[in-house]
Amino acid sequence: MIVSAPSEEKAKRVFLFLQGPSSILYCKIADRLEAAGCACLRVNLNSGDWLFWRRRGALNYRGPFAAWPGYVRHLIADRKITDLIVHGEERPYHRAAIAEARAMGVSIYTIEMGHLRPDWVTIEREGLSSNSRFPVDPGHILAAAEGLPEPDWNRRYSHTFLSEAIADLLYYLPTVFFSLFYPHYRRHGLFHPLAEYAGWLRRLATGRKRAREANIKVGRLSSDNAAFFVYPLQIATDYQLRAHSPFHSQRDAIRFILRSFAEHASQDAKLLVKVHPLDNGLIDWDDYVNATALSLGLSGRVQVIDGGDLSALIVASRGMVTVNSTAALSALQAGKPVKTLGVTIYDIEGLTDPKSIDLFWQDPQPPSAKLLDAFMRLLAATVQVRGNFYSKEGAEAAAESIAARLLARNVNEPGAYVEPPIRKHPMKIDVP
Image (cartoon, rainbow, N blue to C red; front, side, top):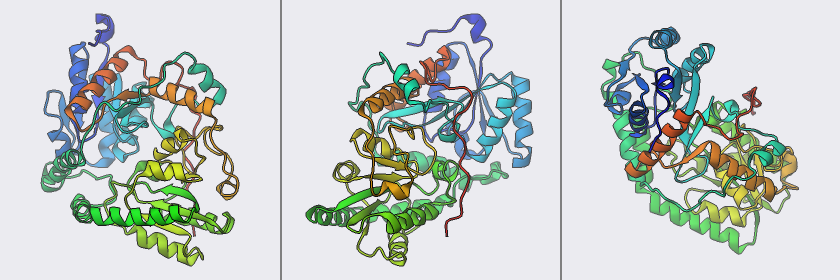
């Protein structure tokens, strides 16, 4: 049960929720915060927001994006907002709101899918990746993790792809068919929702075929005893790619990695590119990767798979190259070398390989087991809670823990909040 804060403290706290996941999670957090005496407000920006916040405290913003910062500034002052909660901090509406909130002394919290998959949820003060305040100094991490318990790695909560897909449909279809109620709303995605759903339907129809083809390719690699690296693709719309990497798009990242591999990896090494399991299929990554590999003289050395067990691939590989995928945490836990190209919470000397990618292919360095153990214990204790977005039990559990941390003001504690910011947004590069 949540322990209520003292009444004098409770009266000061007003939580403003912006767009959240297509889930009951935000409503459940608000229920617990209000039960403890806090006030909770929500600004709906589209019809999907309205549908997933069926409770009191809702405001509807229907104005143009240009007027949004002023609206937020007035709302914070008028309603005496103390805390801002967002999902997807780099969405344009959220980025603008965070800037106003920070200037007015409002505490900022970001909620996302867990760094530790599959049944964890992330909550961090200030933000994630480039905006994260999680420490990067190995000595700090070792000291802060001293005495913290080993996380319970047993899975507690599960949800199906179908439940996630239905929730997504319930959120995005109203934004398309009832857009007249929020005429100025600007979508943050790269693709129209109807196009995405058409892509997912095609992928569902071909899922078994793709899995068989993936198993055949992996079997060939295994039978050849090939030395190979794994490169897991991310979702093209992922803000980890769009805001926290040096690349303008995933295509840029692919060309950059394959060119480095062609020029610097040993001739007997191979690269296995794995399509993200939730990719919408609107870009044919198999064709794009193979065409790029062919242009670089990599015929036969690059394989694309769309399916298969990533954990098994990691164990059999020499290491992983990634922009900033959370899949790298699985590679680190397997003791495999990891090279990152974007900004991420786990890019810490002693965990990831600090060398350039050109040198990584020749001499990949595995993580320090001691530092990895400390990092995982500190991560789980400070910015992760058990639960998920898309099952009732998982959302209830996550809401309980998140609300308790918000009330206690101990997000990122103990010892996982560094002041001032220590990471920077990477400069974008043009990849020929």
